[in-house]
Length: 78
Image (cartoon, rainbow, N blue to C red; front, side):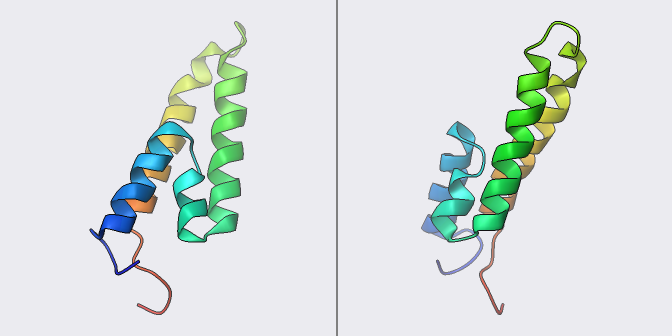
């Protein structure tokens, strides 16, 4: 991937739109992929319960953060 705004970053951001963390996995950032996937999974899962419904915005923030993080990735050593 060349850098910010490259086609690879756009693809990674689109992947993250559908599954949080997938774009990071496409970029080769395994820890970021695991973090965003499980963070969104936990907060969306807790929001699915009636008692903790108020947590869905936190899941949405992590989801949006994962999309932006994949789109702005510059690569190692830059």
